[in-house]
Image 1 (cartoon, rainbow, N blue to C red):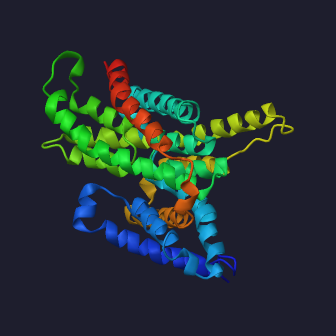
Image 2 (tube, rainbow, N blue to C red):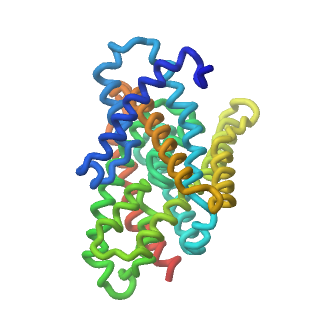
Image 3 (cartoon, rainbow, N blue to C red):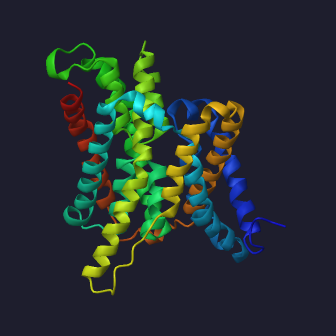
Length: 349
């Protein structure tokens, strides 16, 4: 018996075929060196399809595309927990956790405020864009979308901003470190470990965080390891962030007179924490090959979800957004680079 409802299998297989293509493209030399993950390539392929062949495709594909963007997405986010352990977070120390928590909360607040109040963007696009910059890029946008019940094109807008400014970070941070941070004196100087905390606490995507130390000549192992663990600490914090967001939405609905408070509980975020706990307790007993297989499958499922979201992104729906999303993302990027530097120095010294 199929694990998918009968009416969605065809569309799921269609999305899977695009996802295979995205993974293969991500392994091409120049694409791999830039750091574009299959998730990002998947949404690009999906968007190309949505705006070229979508109107010619049979309607029977749509249920499977929607299933991939909703159900498969939640399962993939939960399985992401096998990449993290609480022990790894503890090893980085309190300063890494404080930087992660401070940058997540301030960026989320600044991004949401800037989007809605300064640049007059709708709530969902503002919050999704803020989530992508605050936590872990495209994966955070994906995790936040079900809580907001946002339209697919708004998710694509947020992801596109993650790609733009996250990619910019990959080139900017090594230039900053080599240009003045490494050899500076006083406040501007960061040792490799502190710079690793700065990178992990402020750059959007996990792949982009990995790429920065790799782009710095003779970067120490401490820098690379610290950057990744601090970044994964931000990933863990997505669960409490989504719960808080659900509470805020519930009380906002109450204030608008929409009846009693209806709490939106992102159960998949709680399951995500449970999986991290399981991984933390039993990682030593699970063969690394099995974990690698799980993570490979999870990457494929996340790519499917991104591809499906791209397939629901039709450019005609973008009317009215204009440059607001860009200015919102730029505001957060400036805060992450400048404010993140100041906060990291203040906490780590």
